[in-house]
Length: 573
Image (cartoon, rainbow, N blue to C red; front, side):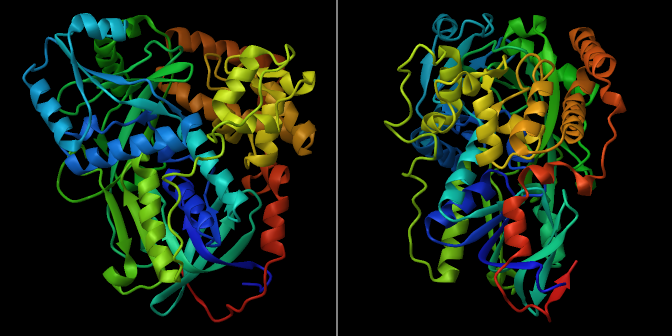
């Protein structure tokens, strides 16, 4: 390994999901130098493949009181510190004629025990609260559920971490741990966009890779077994409910309908899969049928609603028994100090939990690291607002030239940070995506400040391409902006467009009939027939044009690092 190819830091965090980005922020706020590594893009794994529920904890109250308590506590915190990521919709647990009404009393008692406020409603009261809920319900309970945008949440954590000295390397895969005897001293990395290999030396390595954390542990010959439980979901093309609708029964498939920005999501299934399949997820026709059938029981309007796409994620469960579905495995937090547990210094694993408890998981992991590093600064993340959620900040709509839908959409996604990109100029307000009202100014901000390297990254930061047209009428515009704003050539931006369309296609395949089939054919006519997208030559992945869009910081850190000495390190592959 050449001496010019390594970096030094206090802490390396593996995994750019909610927990990893939360740890990055927590470390940076405590003055701990840190680097976050993500093999794809932030929130590209499990954190970005769920239903975006701001749990009240009620879903776990009957089966997992501890997790339910953690959820309601974090629910309250996130409504305060992550306001621009949260919509406080409230929620309903409804009992249908085929369900056991007696379960409702058990449910309410369990919520009371966990500290979750509830309000019992009559069916008429529930329908007034959520008109699209099933009118055949025989009972309902209101709970403080809400919705949270995981992409926005992770991006805000990274932004705050960077502004306090942290660094993030997206599209960077960990290929091994660097060990000296019984001590982990760093990680070996591969930058997947450039093909460049390098090392990072660190005093502590935090494994926050979720379900992929088992692989990281295997690099150190540690026996940590994850239980991969696949969950599939469907997205419908508009927001059919304004309240979260849950089924008041024991956990089962398709028992929750969640509104999310401009759409609604029905989920989820739960199926055990083999560990070697976690990167080969596929939604089956049987899962689609179950989700459609059971979803219509929650809200009958869903039976006549167009399905936009299907997707699946893998829950980061730690295997503790022989449960075949994973529904009865605790969703509790698992923090492993490998020095105390396995005699291996320098490595910590944080796993289990859920999106709702990411901040608490990050606090617990950072507390342990801070203790090992002798850092006595306390956690601030429970009280310090994320960027975008600062009170009494932002720009006022002081001029008629700030178009109201443009301003409202931008402020909804970025809070007071809207002042960084939206002004009274026509250029900043030029609409690129009509479904989500994404402007040229917002695209530029995402490329320059939010670590966006391609159109899929851009989708996660801005929701471009996530509305009813699924990028059909905006992705070519956005691709052209990479030439103007990121300095890549036209051929490269065409490659970004094709990559994005291929990624979008994955979610259409499972529901490829009816309206979805007609829409896909229309998209094909546009991009193949009109633009000739199928003729665009694709460069090798290691030479992907995304690197050119944002390699400056990477080059500065990797190619001009601080001097160190690591010539005799052992690399565990």
